[in-house]
Figure 1 (tube, rainbow, N blue to C red):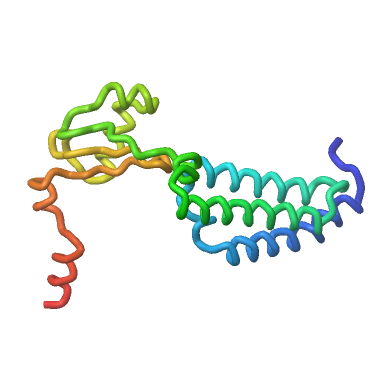
Figure 2 (cartoon, rainbow, N blue to C red):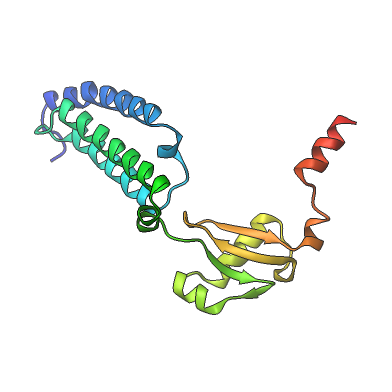
Length: 173
């Protein structure tokens, strides 16, 4: 149970670095989309890649070439689906969820919180993380497709916060 054979350890030491380098190369070739913040579709592909890598490393019945082909196939399928999603709206709707408004003009939208299984405490954490001092300082909180929350501060609150334009003009003087 603790040790099977030296050949098994040697296989992991040989196949591991080769599979890892190949996976990194496949991800670099596939572009930035494969490494972006994850929506549900991207998460499934990422988990499948990890599972494939683990299988290649630990299963003697899966050859390195088979594992590399499986990883390349997963990345190609993700590329093909996202290519289609950019061009065909129903494909995009099928693989991605829509952002959901969960706070509007300083008030929680109770039905949206329940439907998205988000607690008020989680929203308040997002407010604090964004620098918003109070729910009343917020025009909206949006639950994004990747599960993150975007906090849109009210104009009066935003007027007190530095913007990219104000920071840029200040740094030039």
